[in-house]
Length: 185
View 1 (spheres, one colour):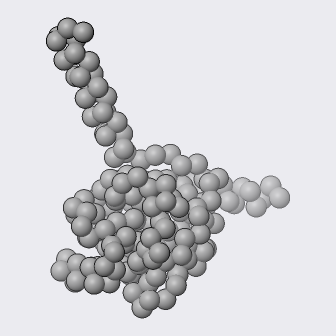
View 2 (cartoon, one colour; view 1 turned 45 degrees about the vertical axis):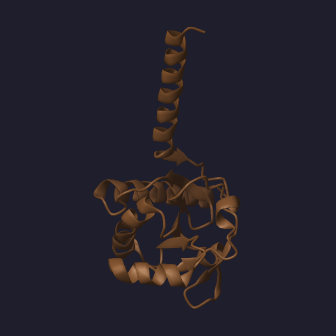
């Protein structure tokens, strides 16, 4: 192969990889029929919690770590999203995969002024495998029946009007679908 063709082939490969990287940061349609694995993790008191404990409310499950710069960057917007939408029908669940657990997360939350989020720790470190998470941060929108509605890889400005509208849109579609399923039965 000539040097020119080799450079051209390398350029095509690099552009392809750059495009793949860009695609990873976009939302991936999930299909509301896929039930999310019932993960078990810990809260800040060391008590066992599972995703099943959140049934009946929608969950924005954010897999993150304190050593991950994009995770650190988006955490304040997740806190503001919880303040805006959080309640009996919606909960932001930031699930830390930090090995140092509370010793890593608690000081970080205090440092950046997190006021509305609870601390959840991925013990015994099952979330990435169970949810097929390839990178951090990864966030799943889970409906009140435990079905994955949407998945985002990479950071977002979670409290922006556009993202809030997007989340509400997914939840409204699911509510409408659930109502029509009930009526047709």
